[in-house]
Amino acid sequence: MEPMRPARQEPTTPVDDSGWPGLDVSVVIPVYGVEQTIAELVRRLCGTLQDGGWSFEIIAVDDRSPDRSAEILAELLKEIPGLRLIRFPKNFGQHAALSAGIERARGRMVFTIDGDLEYAPEDLPKLIAKFCNGEKTYAHPAPLKPEIRVFPSQPRLVLPVFFG
Image (cartoon, rainbow, N blue to C red; front, side, top):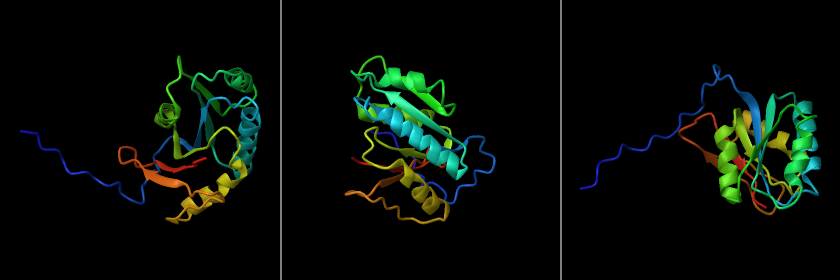
């Protein structure tokens, strides 16, 4: 006989995170084969988030990229205080890279963006504003709309995921 499982609990909304010691925003970037774009992406994200006045971190997860992406990010660590780098010992795939970054994120809001600059990092404040205004629909000017996921185990976390 299969043991009984407790009923799934939906996250409470809105979440009172006034005691949360974390950052406002975490951005997770899965990194694989993006040496041509990763430095520009990180610098543009950093500028956009600084201009918005948010406390933030940018978490780049190197999925054992075969190019110089990890070395470029290691150099950027010296100039961008909000950048964090996670390096995998071998290639585990994009899902694992995203999961590792999300698991280590300290932001009230966690966003993911691909490293290829398909999506403009300057659009991130529009999504943040919609979230902060309590809107339930998030749109991004791209062929596919971002998917919104709420993680019940971490009710502070609302994640627009950009698909590219």
